[in-house]
Amino acid sequence: MSLPRVLNRRNRILLRELSKTDFKIRYQGSALGYLWALLKPLLMFAILYVVFSKILRFGSDIPHYPVYLLTGTVFWNFFTECTFQGIHAIENRGDLIRKVSFPKYIIVLSATSTAMINLLINVAVVFIFALINGCTPSLSWLLVIPSIIELYALALGISLWLGAINVKLRDIGSIWEVLTQALFYAVPIIYPISMVTGVSSIAANIILVNPISQVIQDVRHNIVTDQTVTTWGFNGVGWGLVSIAVVVAILIFGALFFRKRSKKFAEEV
Amino acid sequence: MGLKDEYLQRMRREAMAELEQDDYALKVTDLHKDFKLPTEKAWGLKQAIFNRLKGIKGFKTQHVLRGIDFTVQKGEFLGVVGRNGSGKSTLLKVLAGLYVPDKGSVRVNGSIVPFIELGVGFNPELTGRENVYLNGALLGFSNAEMDKMYDDIVDFAELREFMNQKLKNYSSGMQVRLAFSIAIRARGDILILDEVLAVGDAAFQEKCNEYFKSLHGQQTVILVTHDMGNVERFCDRAILIEDGKILQNGDPKKVAKTYLNLFK
Image 1 (spheres, one colour):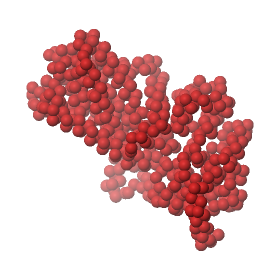
Image 2: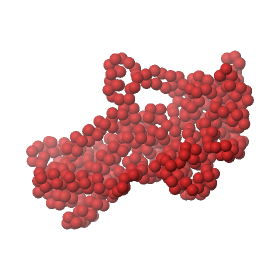
Image 3: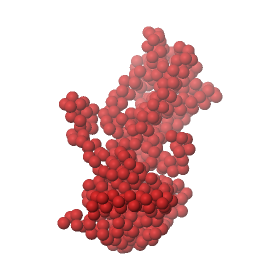
Image 4: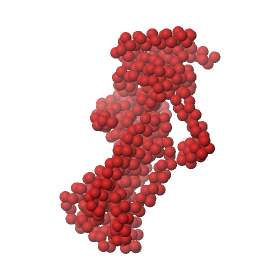
């Protein structure tokens, strides 16, 4: 899979048109249309904020806690949306795959592109919230870009890998939905990591070595407050590199697995 | 024709093709394709585990193509005929690159544009216009190129006043007309068409026939059809597939006759 072939003219045209179609169709028939892309994470944030910040009194020791919480929900939302769309992409586009021959990864890329657009808009909302909440803008805000790339690489790797299995074994989609529910609590989104570090530093390390936690904590560190505990800071740079290695490994494995299986998609889907 | 004759004829054809290396557009050699058909529904994990426990393999192998050989010359209009389930569509899908053959090879001299079905990717929720651009992208056309062709496509389809309506509000005849009008813009060295002639009303069919006549001699075409009239009208040569093998390869009139005799 050499680069010129991956990005050749026909594939680029196809990727753009399919992404456009996915985007148009997603919010068809709803009165608020595209606004839902913004409303969903904001409403989820509102619920979590009321329950965990106001009722359970989490995060009273963290400055700008609402922005801190919003950052977590926005990135988590991106990860789940991206993987849900990506895993079912091949299955949903069976009509195309059975009739036109083209590289199948384009389907996964186009299916996840809507999630990416939504994330970019939501990150802009996070910036606005941060400014309103009194965070000082700085150059470190730009570091959100490598974090987005890391999380997308992870989501794409998982989508390619599980999506390829899901073509034959439709249970994978359902299993993944349950797994993400569990994963939600394994990532410090609603609770501050300080609640765990105080109890068990091994548990905290396990939580932080998860690349999703790494991304969320990095973004919080770079935008909201530099007091955020990051994977890099907690147990040394080595563990930070482990997380990144996990992402790279999943992406490479997912891509190779997908490529091997994709030859039979037209027959199996 | 005896087996030996058939073999000799095949060898001769292959030798000819070797001599005229550059003239062939497509060369299929000893093509085999098997399918594993699930005997019971084995979609889910539960069923897969049950089958494993009961020692059921969960599928039986069906040999759909069992050794297909033929060559298409450049500029030739080849008809492919055969009964339902004979393996025509599978052959087409292997040629189109959708299926990977189990054995044998397909050598293509140039680019292939396959139409396994018209209007692939058409989405009922999009407008006619949006669908034209999407379908164009599947054929490899950029937006700029589609802009240039757009008026021609709409005129040919005679759907000017419907282009901003959603496709779900089109009649099925209108949908095929639109799809066909985009399809004929496709430019490739080899065009593969599967049963797409019978679209629209009599007037539109006449247009389509003219288009096919215009292709004759200009373009390499592989046409799969059940209409022997079309085989005789358009094709330079035809092959008859029966039970995954080529039963006859040659003059369209003779092939059409053999085909019709299959049903007697």
